[in-house]
Image 1: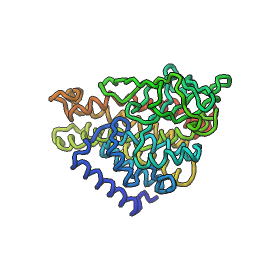
Image 2 (image 1 turned 180 degrees about the horizontal axis):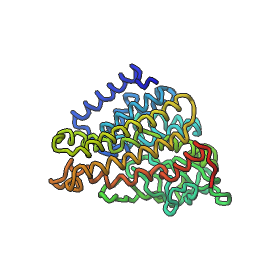
Image 3 (image 1 turned 180 degrees about the vertical axis):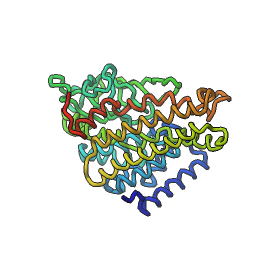
Image 4 (image 1 turned 30 degrees about the vertical axis):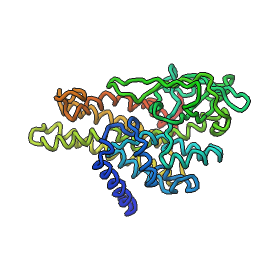
Length: 385
């Protein structure tokens, strides 16, 4: 089996790397772990959009490039490798755009897709709610249909980037009389509308990228309904595969992994054999994760829908990210536990931050327990219950 990339893929990768190296030299950004979900720059996103690297797989009439999912993955892999500030356009490029292509009206497609592709509008995702855990069907945010609009009330939590976004892609209950997996609808909500309050949630590292979002009788125009009313559960089941299967589930803390590798190479003579062997083991695991993610892209390029394959990629890759973060702290010793700002901290405190953030990697986008059920039932054909 030939695992080589094509000449076109290699040229694209070199083009992306040259762009990112130029941006680094210009001081546009500093490599950051989890930058894909935590660090945004409108200027940077517009530059990426100008090169045609947002919405790459979409039709040209909507601002896309009609390129393959494998090509898109080459671009996203390099953005992650460099820890680039891509959070602002990431969600819309990854899944909102595909949802609009699959279910959105022509009006919504024409209104949003070209602007997303140019890096001009940022989206966040409003699914998680208090007391609902990982059960999206337990959504209690209500959207009541009125004359010309839906009146939306409720609360979303752990909403990444809401404070920097223009729109929120919201899952809301439009029929409370039916079983919980039914009666759900999806909306694009302008975050500048009256009645919306965004409150920060600080992580244990003191960072602000999560938010609570409150909707108090927000009047959402009817044309902002995405797809069919009350059928969002089935729409969401498709888009969630895009959220789970990207390279970001493997390379969120790549800058840390790369930095600890470089540090240990510099200290090779002082590094214990057991530590070197563990590092080699992690690099093998990393390459396995890469293959799982590229496998999902190959399936998409064949016009098929990855489901359990996406669950496999997400489960394996996020658990690898946790092991890599834990290894970094262990390998650095006590100085690896010190936070940024402490002059004694190894690698500027990135190991400690990465280790504390790692727990959430197997939760966001579907917990490992849920995903193992998906693999068992849909991938292996095992019975439910």
